[in-house]
Length: 188
Image (cartoon, rainbow, N blue to C red; front, side, top):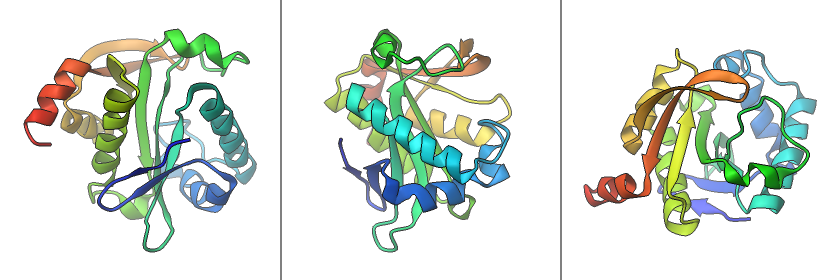
């Protein structure tokens, strides 16, 4: 499992130590509004940590907790993971390796509007392209989630239409390795 760092954040693969901070974020209706539509219970957050640990073991990538290195507080979470077209996670995680890698993020509302999502997304994209060697990253969002759309724009992602992911039709954005290299060359 890989830890990542930015100027203001430590990105740590999900672990039981993040349960309180992740639950404090995922229990907020405003955080889950565009994701599931329902706040998570503590048990659901714990189950998500267990699933993520399984994904890290299978793929060598998944979800990170964004941690403030000064306070230790969970600021948000983000991922580089294999996306799926169906809502349910298959028992055989290897079956998803033929799907594209997805980048995603969410923040605790106390940290909205401070550039943390873009900062973490840039570091996660660098990991996907420069360390994993992916040819393309995609991101999906609820059509009403304009804030995530702006982060996708800052990453240099291009809108490619509405596609079926997670059992829903979702606006989908993509970033190729070539476009990432051009975006990096501009001094992001």
